[in-house]
Image (cartoon, rainbow, N blue to C red; front, side):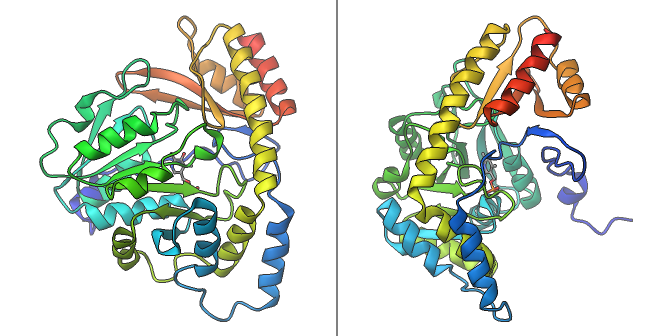
Length: 348
Ligand SMILES: *Cc1c(COP(=O)(O)O)cnc(C)c1O
């Protein structure tokens, strides 16, 4: 006897990267930031705790929206906050895609989009990236009745970016909103915030988990034209962001110097990791994110992942049907990367 809807019964559920709760691991598997968050975050949380937590938080996270709007050059009513950007992606899917309807995403890419489609009982259409990680016009072909498209930019696992010009072309050709998932945009050379102004179909999502070193806090947001944002506000849980997260996230984005410095360190280490992996015989595409995707033409990489794990170094092993497998390695500190690279050197 099952009480679940057929689509819930049939789905497998999203499997996140391993988060060991004990033991000492070098964690390079879920693209967390290896550096501590700005100190202002701790102070903001302490100050907010001192005010007490008996009352509900601000349902629309006004303090964060005001500061984010200033930094991004939009108005506060263009911003919708969430309990991590995954929560925002959930709101977007619930808002636009009903049972039996169609949602589209490229592949290989972020697997959570498929989970969101499955929860809705919707069809998830996966369009293959080209071998050079560009996206063909297949993405904008046969779109009758398409309700939503997701495009992570930079993409995971590749770390590659489509240009804003290409993203705009795709958005203009689609009959539905195009969610540009910019979880990693702070590490990239370009982003698509300006496109939101130019095209109502473009919705950008951002996360504080990666670039602001706050994956444990849970805060993300969408940037959309105000009539779209207003619709999303109807769908989100009333108080989806807690008071501590709102205070901390506002303090984090306020520290622009911290972001510039941390971003610089990660981009420098990313270049080092890329070069070292290429020297070890891996094919590595240039990344615009805080991770690097490593494929090996001759050697199986799964045993390497397993041996690294035995040595307490976690990287992400990904195997995409019809595409192949590889190791996604997050850009840790130089010390962490040295340990990882020394181990891989012994395995190739
Ligand atoms: C990490 C990640 C997210 C989720 O970010 P949270 O804010 O931690 O929920 C969303 N999209 C992509 C592509 C990611 O890699």
